[in-house]
Length: 297
Image (tube, rainbow, N blue to C red; front, side, top):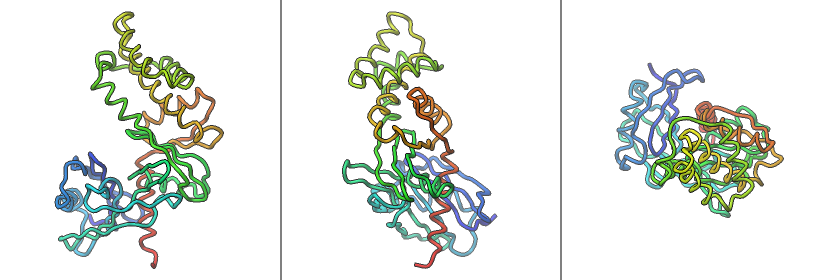
């Protein structure tokens, strides 16, 4: 089955590709050969392993976003500086040896003050704007590195990144808290921890150790400890990002579980958030970039 063009989301850990025909994704393929395990000269073969069944005789346009365009990736796609459209100028076309390939790598976004960068999330923002071109407000993208993004008149105005997801992973697997957390969840413990962190974010280091102490002294359940850990970290993030979300229209773009936690945390603070699926937003953003690449220069 030949595609009309191929959409690619290439992150640090994984590669996802979709064959697009008549404007719809008709096939999907994945690989664990993310940017983090590939040398620059190995990207073409890793891509072919995934998409070769969709190729015809002539050059196939492949539009890729994410860490494939990082400095350590296939070829660096320089950051576009905000304020700018979410998929701004600066795409690159890496050299390929297979004549069936025509690869475009999209740029990420950068902010000078405070210093910040993103790669991949800008495509999801572009996808959401394809659905709602007049959107004016905040798009939050929960994840390993959560992004709070101010969008107005079709442009990313500013953004801020929080390492909340990575901190949760490090604390739950590589700190003393690994002995306290585990399977299960406690909604009440989560919302109470969000309120606690919002009220006294400067005390979070002490609150974190208290999880371990309460495990030893009061047999705190692992599901409750996990929910409190998540609530403390997300609450601290919301406290620091208050200027972004307070009084704004908020859209959460991400995976279901992460989006649900952020929506619940915001709801405890009286903020209502809309939601959108991350994969569908990525596809919509890549489709918007593909359409723009077809326009006369």
